[in-house]
Length: 255
Ligand code: NAD
Image (cartoon, rainbow, N blue to C red; front, side, top):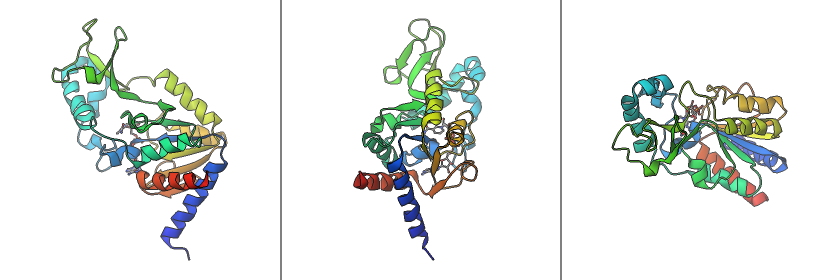
């Protein structure tokens, strides 16, 4: 009988062969890929929603209580997320794109770590925390140009309160990221799903649509997700950084 280690290596080899033969492999990432960069997920035992009330990023609450919301937003998304650096999983995926083996990354994350790692074709399904936007006159500001010691930050042009450019509860998915993500789902022949519970919709429809269109689903997660027993073809159980590091090294040897 094969040991657990050998079973994993066998599955990893299978995944590598499938990616090498693919014509259009894409990646779909959730909060799990950034856990090893020190950013906790929202859900689960150590999830942020056990510590903070999600109401602070509800659009109606935010506009009614901008100061209270911004205190919490600053703490979570700027004081805490702000210094996070990409980990081996983000770098491994960027390498796979350079090798021509990954065509795009569809991410639910708002932490900019795929771009920081060097990935080029990144569709940010839930937006990004690095920019602040004025919903009145559409002005945009890089957060590094804004003094977050004075809350809430205001639009210099019209005086309206600025909002981080990631989506709050009650907001639409950014149009271009939405279209590109679902186009990718229709066009890919392999989708690599990393660190997502699959509980957040409509984002979770992306890998589901890929599967319906005939894509092979490789999943990387230390725990089973909603996807594992429904759409996953090959489950690589483990931490994103370890699995993707091994995967990209093996791909490098074989290209
Ligand atoms: P989630 O918070 O619902 O679930 C996280 C998933 O990551 C779980 O399946 C968990 O088993 C897995 N995981 C934990 N450690 C891992 C590791 N080391 N390697 C790989 N996987 C690991 O995440 P979600 O499904 O992405 O949904 C939450 C939503 O919240 C997302 O849509 C995202 O917009 C947002 N969010 C973003 C960030 C970020 O930008 N980094 C962080 C928290 C939440």
